[in-house]
Every structure is written in C-alpha cells, then in structure tokens.
Amino acid sequence: MLQLPLASNTHLLGLPVLPGFIGMFLLTVVLLLSVAWTGHKALRSAHLKLVVVTVVSLGVTIAFAERLGRSYDLKAAGRIYPIHLFLAKTATASYLLPVVTGIATLRSQRWKSLHGKIALLVILLTVSAAVTGTWMILQAPLKPA
Image 1 (cartoon, rainbow, N blue to C red):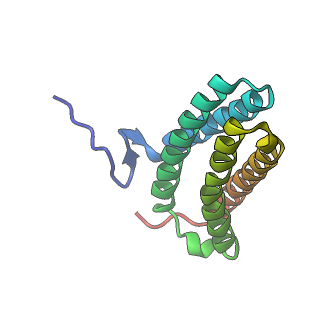
Image 2 (image 1 turned 60 degrees about the vertical axis):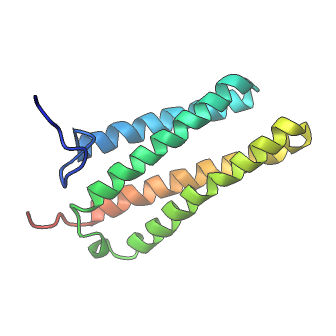
Image 3 (image 1 turned 90 degrees about the vertical axis):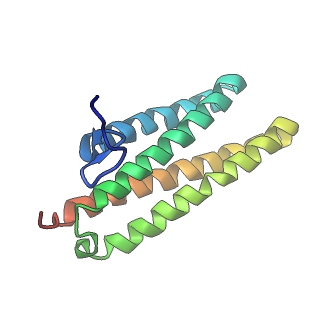
C-alpha cells in the first residue's frame, strides 16, 4: 500500500508545498469573500457554516505557508520579514474578534454594525498579511538544497 507522509520538507498532507499553498490560499480567499457576502446578506445559517470552514481553511493555509517558508532565507528578504510576521500574527489573532462580536450579534442585533466593521478590519489585516507575505517570498532567496 502506498503511504504518503503527512508532512515533510517538500510535502504537506501528501501535496507538494507550493501548489498546496497556492490552492489553499485561493480557497481561503473565496471562502472569506463568501463569509463576507453571506454576513452582509444576513444569511445566518450559511454564514455560520462558512465561518467554521474558512477558519479551518485558513489554518491549513498557514501550515502550508510555514512549510513553504522553510525553503527560503526569509531574513534575507529584509525589513518586509518582520513586518509580514507582525501582520500575519495580528491578522490570525484578530479572527477572535468577529467570533466574539458575532456571538454577541446572535444575542442582540445592536452588535451587528460593530461586528461588520470588525470583520472588515480582519479582512484588511488578512489582505495585508497576504500582500506582505507575497512580497517577502519574492524578495527572499531559496535556501541551498
């Protein structure tokens, strides 16, 4: 029987790291847009289900990103490296905020406006992390094999 390792330097979940990262990143973007759309349209059931799926997708995307980063000399990318790390960690932690305000909104609609604003902030942080991450990878040289 063929056994695929769950993780190696070049593979994660049986997928090559770069295509796996790109695929998971694109899936996460589509899911995040779907979460925003269903939230804006007040499609509560779909919105809540998509939130869960999006958070899982984001987690897998982050795992691929970290594995991809092992192939690059990220510190050689310069100042963008610490900026990206700050934005990525801040964006990841910020996902707790719309969860809290979302639960509050389920209990009372007075939180809905704040929830929407916080969700937009989280999306902007996520986009900033994605842009700086791309910039960082484009600046960083590959580590020698």
